[in-house]
Length: 446
Image (cartoon, rainbow, N blue to C red; front, side, top):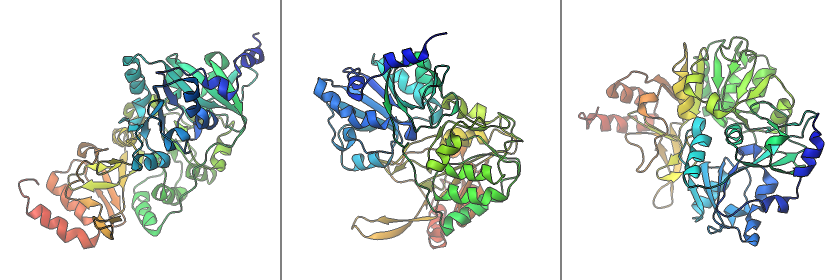
């Protein structure tokens, strides 16, 4: 039997030694969100001291503000983010010259980014976090298998942080020591995402959705006040299942109260399925060594054809703005990138393929924004046309239910006039006349 400990020790390095393995022109891909290797990324800007330049870092939902973003050096490191986190939004607002967005849907982000980097003939390096090795030589990629598994299977160069505090998870997170080129040892808590309290409007939106979700449904939720309110409302349901891109604290609550038992799923019955996890230590502790939860690659979890195999699949996502055609801007505010496409289109389209399945797009009816004079004003988030330059995350062809605190309307199969009438009915009352006036004055459009 191979001496896995000896193999492990042969690959062990200090952080400076591991970073010296990165070469000029490399395409570095960092593990997603809470699984990002924080200690390596905190020092990666020091590659400039070794004369390294032209390195690109692709990442998703970074939870820590690193020097390579806050003190940009475009000649050394550029950052390609496919779902912006707070640090990237801050850097973008400051005009960081080394940051740009990668438009992708979750189920193919790793494959497509690999394709682009291979076209450029760049060496691809994966930086990831792992839980400690077991007696059989296996480690766990812990909190994300979204694209990390795809990269490893493609034979990229792999450097990992072996973190004593990372959860050991199952599924496509399993990685053998022989697949790792270098490792460093760390001992720190995984980055956490605080729970967002839900508001009265969140609860109203959640109520409209809850009444439409039947016992035995399989659900996909995201993060924020509305999903948290919905999870709270779903506690009275029975035999729910989970097939979601992101596992969160509110899903632990649904499992622990008995609302979720995965007993009626048609795909991976008795298993909670996700592709990454992000939340508080409560979530990470629940996942640790828990065989009832599997994290699989996003190429499978978020494939609409796979999602469509779940009976009564219910997809719940949020939008920043929606126009009267039903086009959803969920990732940008006008031309300004705010987040990313994520898996919204994947899950919305997949859910509508299932028997008894639905997609819900949720948003508040209004927002308080600064006008051109710098003063606050309330605007409608249901608008005649999206702001100039807005990115359409979910096309009008793929929209099903739209929900605000004033109700839920189904746009599936509806013509443009019917869509406009239904959306106006759930707009804030203060803006309904204005929206009706627009429709009346553009008969050639609707």
